[in-house]
Image (cartoon, rainbow, N blue to C red):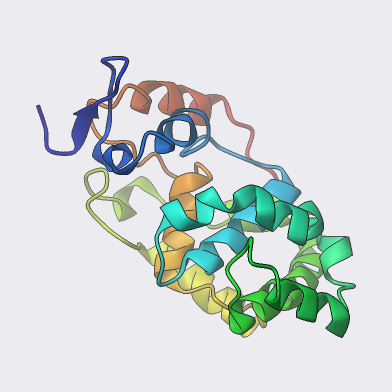
Length: 203
């Protein structure tokens, strides 16, 4: 068996990173790599990936419900109205990652996301305009960024986004289905390929 594959408790082969904790299995099977076009979901993932920077996804995933509660379910319109009192509340919230720069980035990025919605019609249309071409991608899980993620990062930073480096955005693309990075032999690679084939890219 490939080192990129591990057998789950149900005997099904999955990407080896699920070995870290069985809590990863539902996330791996039901979320990671499935194409998403919902603006709220995309904004949430951009925010959570920014919180992951320098940390493990396991840490962020374990606190995801707390993050949702703290940030009004990542409703862009609500977050952009956060006050100084809200910022203080978040810095004192032990249920989330209390990093001032990352908290400020979410509030800032909510405004930047609204600007993209005004310009492109939806955050989804902007995000999917950066879908990597097949020739940018090597074997599954063999890279940590790609030319599209690098270009998207540069564009977002020019627009004033924070904590959107190329590695962060590539992880976002992996999780939101802009590419299928499930390992060869993983039980979810085929279903995700089929979902991406059916998926209607937003315009």
